Amino acid sequence: MVRIHLGCQLIYDFPQATAMIVMLNVHYSRVAQLERPDHLITSPAVPIESYRDSFGNWCCRLVAPAGRLTLGTDSIIRDEGLTDPSAPDAVQHAVQDLPAETLLYLLPSRYCETDNLSAEAWRLFGQAPTGWGRVQAICDFVHGHIKFGYEHSRPTRTAAEAYAERRGVCRDYAHLAVAFCRALNIPARYCTGYISDIGQPPPYAEMDFAAWMEVYLGGRWHVFDPRNNQPRIGRILIATGRDAADVPLTHTFGPNTLAGFRVWTAPVDG
Image (tube, rainbow, N blue to C red):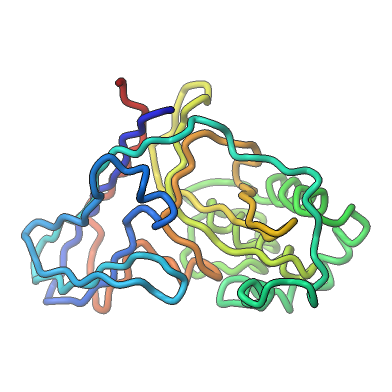
């Protein structure tokens, strides 16, 4: 068992009082492993209303006052310290055999325009083995096709645009892989959360939130990470949805400036 210190701090400047939705809390599937609640804390303190969205993610609703607002979370989570599980024998289900709740993740969405990529998906991967092998072939392709760089970040880039431009950040890798999977009748959903550097060789990049995907094979959801394309230790889920439009870390209903951003996730002794 590994104890991981995780959290974040975001600093905003607002010209006027502004409504916000914040999605920074650990996913309900991991809450039992938290040593203390990862409550959203703001400075100055403001009233916070919490609710679950249609995907089961925990959301916080607040009104930021004019001026500077600092918000964030901080906790320690107990993790098994194992790499992402692998299931090479996991099979692909026929669409008519899929559970009804997975069908949503076969459809096009805001950033995963499956209809625009369907022909390319079948051209590239139609001959790959079905099931786990086909999804891994998609991840291998996306990992090599897109050049990573924060300077390439663009919040409106879609999967088809990432495919054409061949550059982006982790959300672009995830969007393209999700779109390819859906085009091949494999349910896939977008995930956001923390990935630690546990088990990775230094030097370490500055910590940030990460995006990956979960794919439904063999009767359950499995993690695939086209950005890193290798099993990782200390992957902590925050939220899942159709794509990044469903799970923004913060959604602000008015003008603002992000003045500071910090994320941490690191093993602790004891």
